[in-house]
Length: 223
Length: 235
Image 1 (cartoon, helix red, strand yellow):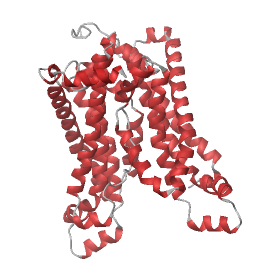
Image 2 (spheres, each protein chain N blue to C red; image 1 turned 90 degrees about the vertical axis):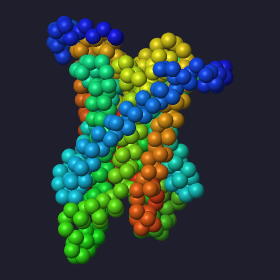
Image 3 (spheres, chains in turn cyan, blue; image 1 turned 120 degrees about the vertical axis):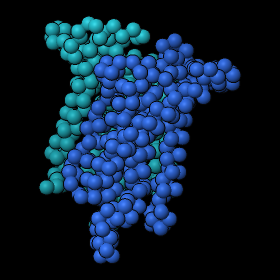
Image 4 (tube, rainbow over the protein chains, first blue to last red; image 1 turned 135 degrees about the horizontal axis):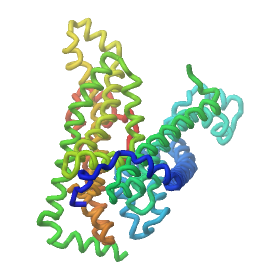
């Protein structure tokens, strides 16, 4: 990496000829990137719903949960992956432990905020109508908390898509692998195209989730 | 468990505490570079966020800059900057500064927006001119949220500065990246601990700075550590 020879060679930012013959490379990267992201967001959501509900229910847990998750959230992903490598190796498990953790740390907060935003009057009305605690939670509180939870899922998804590129250093990475490839071989095309595709993927995911939210939560539509 | 024993031995080895690849030098490099980037970023971002927040203009822009910033992979940005500017600190400073800006713009915008309209009116009624009103009424009230943005940026810059070792940068990331390249898990683990501790120390130090900067009267009004206006993690 010491010698900077590429400046002498004219390497365009995007070599369209190379690109046109290497589509499968990008498809494979997209597949891995999407899979790593989907696993993290799905497992993260499944974990943070009960955790968020529990932290909301038992007020004593609230501050410890927020503090601990805030602390874990500040740990750089590359450090977290590296701390896991001696135990779980260069594996999908290592990547997902990190990615799921960050997803949970984002979502748990949104679950709690969503549940806290349910008006007291609504809860009183539900109680008055004879809802038991579990039914009240499932049929009143969670639906009203869903807009905040959905907002959290959007942030978590976009964040995860960005963080997946960093898993290139542990041999995964999706588009990140192509970024690393471009760096190591001093070849601009995979690097630039993979970075752009990663951004596009994040924006498309964000907009799709926003559309899904509008369709599935008619009660939360605002002008 | 032998990993931990090796890591402890690594930290106790005086060799790792001296010379150009010693912990003190690497730590200073990491902190200095990060501090420069956060400072430059703050000089750009805070005036923009404060102005937009004060006038209540371009709110979508101020909010969305964080959404877009979150979507940009910090790793790709570093490598592209490296290809554009070549070896040295310049590509690192440019990309770290760029990623420091969005959370600070969004937070300072929201901070100024959230200043109570009644308070602004009272200030005007007391004869404050616009500049004095911003400096002496709105900014003190906005400090907690502005500092939350600075904290978010700083932690992300410290985290991404670790990745800079991939493009031949210095700092604590060297241990992580060299450890990975050499298959030296002891060095990797030790480096990761140092990076994680530095990120936590950054968060705590800036939380302390925030407490010092918030005027006492306002400290009584709110919880000491303000919520962040935006969740932002790119590294």
